[in-house]
Amino acid sequence: MTILTQTCTPFDDQKPGTSGLRKKTRVFMQPGYVECFVQSIFNAIGGVAGKTLVIGGDGRFFNLEAIQTILCMAAANGAARAIVGQGGLLSTPAASHLIRKRGADGGLLLSASHNPGGVNADFGMKFNTPNGGPAPEAVTDAIFAETQAITSFKTVKSSDIDLNTLGETQLHATTIEIVDPVADYAALMQELFDFDAIRAWFANGKTMRFDAMHAVTGPYATTILQDMLGAPDGTVLNGVPSVDFAKGHPDPNPIWAKPLVDMVMADGAPDFAAASDGDGDRNMILGRGVYVTPSDSLAVIAANAHLTPGCAAGIKGVARSMPTSAACDRVAEALGVECFETPTGWKFFGTLLDAGRVTLCGEESAGTGSDHVREKDGLWAVLMWLNILAARDLSVKETLDGHWSTYGRNYYSRHDYEALDVAIANDLMADLTMDLETLAGQQFGACKVTYADRFSYHDPVDGSVSHNQGLRINFDGGGRAVLRLSGTGTEGATLRVYLERYEPPEGDLGIDTQAALADLAEATAQICGLAQRTGRSVPDVMT
Ligand code: G1P
Ligand code: ZN
Image (cartoon, rainbow, N blue to C red; front, side):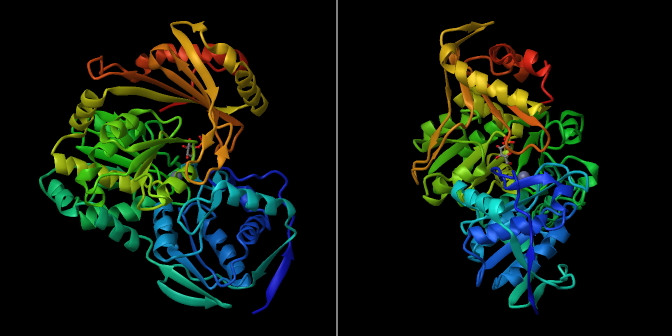
């Protein structure tokens, strides 16, 4: 088999964000584009000769084509082995587990997460390191540098490799191993959670709906919930992965998973409901009549994790992204364990997890996980809740109310302003940054600013520093607003405004969330001149 060296054009401005490279699918479909990025990754990690790679994606449009391209390039670059999920499928947490379990040298994960899929929608690729986690900044910077300079890539010509049949085949000197995408992951979940207790919970007639949103978790949830835990058929909804997620938006939040939210708010609601996103790393938790914010979910999990076999010895610590509410901080304090505040993006949890400083991590954006893998994990969070419900024999609402009456409630909401003009959004942030120091002491409507700053993170493990990770405005009485621009959007700029206010256990714990935060929202809009600058007075999405 001849190894071909073909020319490609360097990228002009394609800096991969926290989640790798995410673009319109048609951008990835340009001849040589995937090749340029993949060769840049290979070059940046010192080549793949003799190495083992895990490869898989969430099944979206172009997933299979991209995998065929990668396999030819892995062979041409001398990889020893490529471990591929059957049908090209691997959820992001399952890929992370596989990289760790097999001692692989890394993985290529194909997904644009919760973004829609299809020829006119989004695609993405990222590289995970041998610890199973997303590449840290030093590696993504090296990949980026390669994409700016690259002029050629290596490949072999091959007919399509059969990705559907389990077992090994040979491509040039590379062994291609097709594995069941679910088996290893399901076995891990069985170690971490009390499957007997959850099975008994279902056997007692408790009901659940899991919305896989036509994305990758369908086969995982069907195997684990229905086949292993005995939940009846019909527990998993939309469980067959589709290339365009049935034209949906596989984002498990109250907007895009509205039918599920409506279901738990209506008569005959199931006891528990949950959803996951395109690649299976995000989660949404619901109970009869109740939506659990991701920030609260992290706090409840921290307070109850010791009830599960995987955390029976207690948790070492908790980490949350800075814009996530401080609900888990109170649990960490009560438990006497460390709590870390990191920049947005799962990669910042990696050093803490690797160093054994934390067991649990979470982000307000529906990401929750633990040290069992190095990605957030949607189904893990779902099983964690199931285990807690089964162990405590409480409903979701009772669990949440009980949590608030112990720790108090952090009212919390994120307001997103999407597809803004990039220049306008950048100016808004730049001007606000300049004004930050002058805000202290000023009154805006009902709220007075105590201090405002720009968040920089000093990684306590490796000493690295990440600047410019969001603007924080703190108000009298403990309210807080955080502003940052999204790093994952694919159209214009997305401004995220995170609002939070703490109410102690003896306070009013039953206010409507948006009403509880209205004054803060108003003050924040005034401070940054939101309406004048963007022409928007209401957010596109509130979660
Ligand atoms: C968003 C979320 C962030 C998450 C990332 C990848 O990033 O806010 O918490 O880690 O997606 O799933 P953003 O678009 O805000 O940069
Ligand atoms: Zn995702």
